[in-house]
Image (cartoon, rainbow, N blue to C red):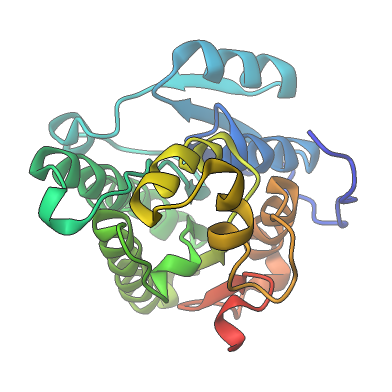
Length: 256
């Protein structure tokens, strides 16, 4: 993990946090940041070994879970104060070639599972009069790109889910927000290089310049720790009036 971003004074002592997709990338950075702030962090990931490794390092609790098993999630009750919905996958393909099974997998993981996790957490949050729902959305929750129909559709949908949660949760002390980063320096993005090169008809060496950094004004990838810092602030008491919003971290992508 990079140490270029210094944690702010955002205490979460006594808070219970669930971070999905926390075995690597943004989720790992968020889990580490919340643990640094004193929270009890559950590190959820489909990769049990990765979840255990992160949990051991930060003093958290691992949870190996398949978030596409919606029947199991429908029966779940979560006794947590903060939910960070981060788990996601990507597939790059023109619509006419996009596998229906892959589309269904992505939308199940990235919109149905967040709904079910939110549903499982809200009752306890309402009883305690406090809760934070944070969706790691994307600039693709606000803008579209070619060849990412399932991902873009899911991110747009989670924006709507977050806003409805914000309205329903307001009287119970629960806020709900989205964080909308551009391309973040993670394995998920790195795995796109070959698919992006193929679908755009360019070499793999050209993908970073011609795809990842084409639209942002700031020509660098986002660090996972930068996303984690914003998540920590949105989870804090200082952000009690911030709800139903989308916080863009895209280097100026959507400014033009």
